[in-house]
Image 1: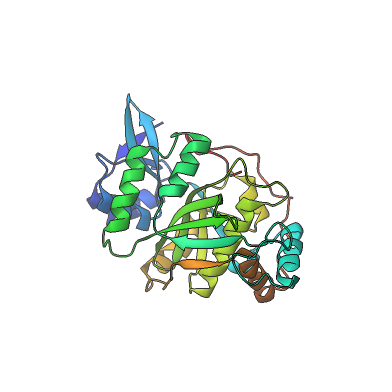
Image 2: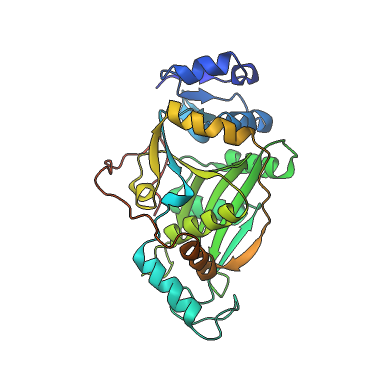
Length: 295
């Protein structure tokens, strides 16, 4: 695999336009864990992972050949999640986040924050450090504390009524676009609920209500993204959608905690005829180097 050394000059015209146009340029390496260059690469549409190469560990932004993009009208809420959310919302006394009962979503909360500590620990505990090692985790904390223009780290958590972390995701906001980095579902999360799907869809509703244009779900090879309504775009089509949205005035998001069932209920109300995911065009599952499947 060819990996090109990335500099700030390469992320500005005319060089970046040349890189966009040539599919040969896909993987890049950053010398050191430079937070500013990481953010510039993210705004250019590159998604970074930890990559072991030539006996060393690198921060490796990828300019993908295809992207999974979730437009809000295309979202698909699985029927079981719809029923579980409706049951929770219909039960008396479940308006409080702390109130248990009313089925598996009773008392379950969705939290949006900027502290990646718990979710990083969950991802590493589930998958190891194949793409998110300790150096990358430290970089996320640097980015979180820095005032880097046009970039905001977002961490979403789904927690049970007792505070137990059931699922979580790392991502970031650039302009009016949210990009997924990675997420996980706890191995001891109660069965019978698609916790990963619930987290993504609840987050999507927060993004909709905050004026975010769409969700960049990253790699196009993971089938669950298509079931949730994502479309696969080649690089050219993706950039035509991405670049204007990244350049737009940043969306305003507030951190906080809400009822998971309440967010899913508002999704249903906002899109009463939810898109049905088509299985006709589902691709075989494959993963990029070090990138785990979402469970």
